[in-house]
Amino acid sequence: MSMTYERAVEILDPQHREHYPSIEPVNEACRMGMEALKKQIPTAPALSGDGFADGALVYDTWECPNCGKQYEVEYEKHDYCPSCGQAIDWSENHG
Ligand SMILES: [Zn+2]
Image (cartoon, rainbow, N blue to C red; front, top):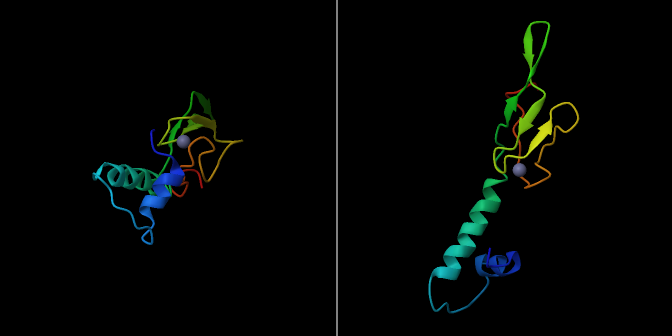
């Protein structure tokens, strides 16, 4: 990305006063703010598995719905994706 997070925060600050020659930097700051906020909305992970136990498929892998990084359900059940910061909703899956 071209704009730094620091610059985006400055533009999004309601106290900040600046005359912009075009709407582009404002749009870019809004886009970055939106992307950051979307990660705060808990989203269910995609679960997958390749093994069976007692006749039922065992879901041993979950995938971040934002960045697609895969983790092991048993050892890496994070509330936030360590890779991108996406909030993960575990309420529907194997609570
Ligand atoms: Zn992620």
